[in-house]
Image 1 (tube, one colour):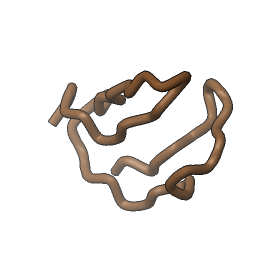
Image 2 (cartoon, helix red, strand yellow; image 1 turned 30 degrees about the vertical axis):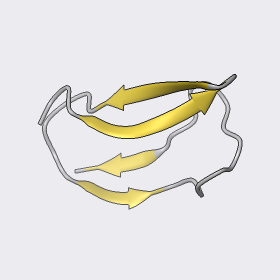
Image 3 (cartoon, one colour; image 1 turned 90 degrees about the horizontal axis):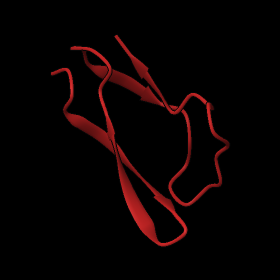
Image 4 (cartoon, one colour; image 1 turned 180 degrees about the vertical axis):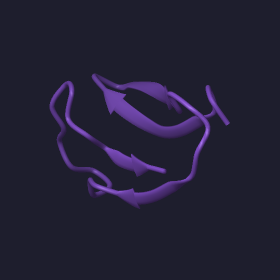
Length: 47
């Protein structure tokens, strides 16, 4: 569902809930748990 949390990203000891931008299904996770990511990097594939 649009707005549903699909991922939680930790930044500086703060947990940030990442909402789905639209309704769909996560078909692929593009990052490994614990890996560093840059702002704007794709994290999941949403169909």
